[in-house]
Amino acid sequence: MFTLSGKPAERDFLNRIMERSGQNLLACLQCGKCTGSCPIASENVGGPRRLIAEILLGMTEAALNDPTWWYCVSCGSCVTRCPVDINTYEVATALCEEAHKRGIKPSEPDIHRFEDLFLKSVKKYGRVKELRTVALFNLLSGQPFKDMDKGLTLMRNGAVSPLEIVMDWKKDERIARIFERAERSGDGE
Image (cartoon, rainbow, N blue to C red; front, side, top):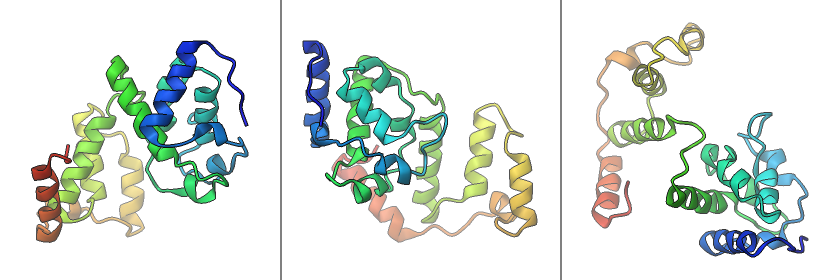
């Protein structure tokens, strides 16, 4: 458990994140189970343990610029393994709101573009059309050939079909209705 001894502004930041996320970060044991099970943790993305440590240690700028919360896929692995039930996705959401409020740009500049393309694919087809979404993302990001080698390997192995790019798939009305309800309620972005 951590005992705070930082400056009042640092404690205020911690308290705001805990209040917005509904997570008691002071209960964190820093055991590392969250990061050990996190699919996005890597050499470049430190993972939930480091992110929570930054918040607890009053490293406001480091926490707000940490790529972990931008890459969080809300899989729930962190909270499933956490002995004190801290949901890092909720913390990531609170950090996103705080960064937006402070005008801090995402660590991945095109992340919102990818998010938008991903959701449009799900809305239209009922699932993400991977090849089409990645190809469009790379085109709009000015890197049209970025993942071509990976795409060709996936096609060669039968994991994706090149027809996915050109075919217009049938719209899944059930999923479209879910999106419409969310947009009407004001919760959809």
